[in-house]
Amino acid sequence: MPLASFRLLMLAAVMLPTAFAHAGDGTVTVFAAISLKEPLDKIGVEYTAKTGTKVVISYGASGALAKQIENGAPADIFASADVKWMDYLAEKKLIDPASRMNLLGNRLVLVSPADAGNGVTLDSGAGLSAALGGGRLAMGNPASVPAGEYAEAALRKLGLWDAVSARLAMTENVRGALAFVARGEAPLGIVYQTDALSEPRVKIVATFPPDSHPPIVYPCALVTGSTDPAAASVLAFLRSPVAASVFQSYGFVRTSN
Amino acid sequence: MPTFSPAEWQAIALSLKVASVATILSLPLGILAAYLLARGRFPGRTLLDGLVHLPLIVPPVVTGYALLILFGRKGLIGAFLESHLGLVFSFRWTGAALAAAVMSFPLLVRPIRLTFEQIDTRLEQAAGTLGAAPWKVFATVTLPLALPGILAGGVLAFAKALGEFGATITFVSNIPGETQTIPSAIYAATETPGGDAQALRLALVSIVLAFAALLASEALARWTRPREDKAP
Image (cartoon, rainbow over all chains, first blue to last red; front, side, top):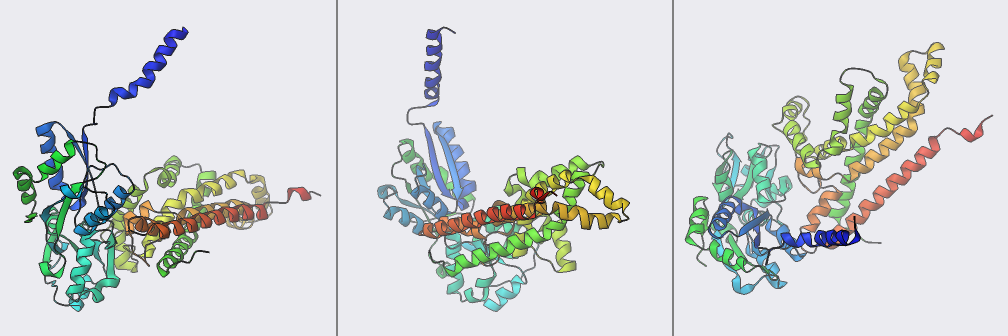
């Protein structure tokens, strides 16, 4: 091949990647608590249908996601399942405080496999322990999963913690606990009401009184260093009536901000 | 010398227990599988070969999920074992040991099989002509000659079992004292604020243990190698 043609070919080759780059990239990345999965997927699709901007959502336990953002993960928006992890990032100046808003509320429930017997109550530690039999209580790890933190707080407040603390199966996120109960691996689990409603293989056997745990609030905010101008628009869309009706259809409660 | 918290010691002790049980209990099956693959000529041999090597290539999460379906409380085999033998794998260290044993099985079998293939069958035939029954030939001639490979395979499997993570966390989750082995403890520490120091300490322990296992494997292989330099 003649030298001039070869050089031209090389030039074209190194410029090829730029053909795939768009101005501002155009994709908004959301890091969201896994309990938001079904409604948020739908809302993402709605937003893309309306505006053409692609929305990519990464789900996980809020604590795990917060640590990823702390380590430089390229998120534009963070939606947490509790105030603690949002505050954690706010303290490190990793979210834009002006954009922060409370999106939703939820309830904490005790679930069992759908075909299990009834009669489990939250009245006594002995009763709950007996209901577990030889099995374990599935819940998120309180160290990084908001559902686990709410669960521990509720169990302590109700005086049930001592009876069950040695019988826990802690999972990486709340959906892991839901899956164990759905599979029948764990006789009982503590998850959000919205999770229980989305899984036909479990049933709610008891609801934790709202005053037994800190109020379940889902704050969301823009991540600092997010360069995409569409991100603010996505955040605003999460508050729109369209989004609200999607959240409501999955059992989420609106919070008064 | 870094100091370890009780939780970290618990993870280290549990890892050693799980890996030891996994390796020792899978040795007989590993030797049998290696022998069949090295010497056997039967239909389905290729299938056995594939099955033995499957955990090495399939994503660990898939292996863990398969274990969950088969050996969980409601699993096909798990339910039977629980009701008849009282053996429970769900959320228990026995489940962690099973996951470690399955994942390290290919690494156990390969060195043993290679050694069996290298043994001079004329030695076995000689023992046979001298009147030894086949099982006696195996026990007194074949097995001692295969010892370097068995030890190498055992130590390699032990090191792999120490580091098993994906299948373990999918099958028996992450329960301190029961199933939180060193890798699971490191993973939990990385998701906890302020846990980076703990993660680093445990990672160093993991590396040291793996190195020690590899050095032991080398030393053992050298010790049991026939002394070729002492020819008469």
